[in-house]
Length: 105
Image (cartoon, rainbow, N blue to C red; front, side, top):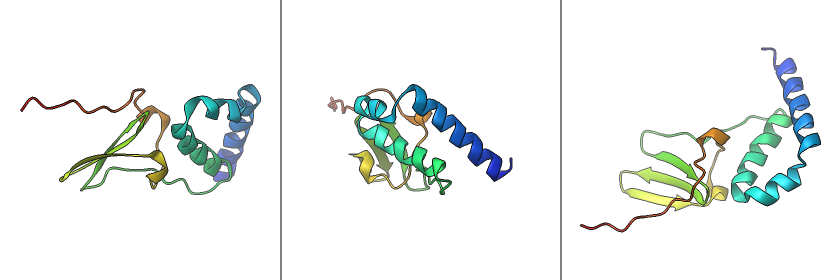
């Protein structure tokens, strides 16, 4: 698809969504995950490069309501979304908090 057409289509879609649901009301309900999505949303709107957070050969990621989980060979760490170098698609985010379960062993 021609990038000019795609850019215009995204712009029209964003305007339609903002007309129905103001971004400020969405952000007040969604917290820090919304800030990540808002940043991606704004980059697409401004026709900037969108960088997505991806698994690597050394690390994989899972996205929860209370942060993102970075898993590597040395273990895992729950991090704040502000620390994430890229963005994620909404469908990648799990609608629950990450909680550790004490081991019985």
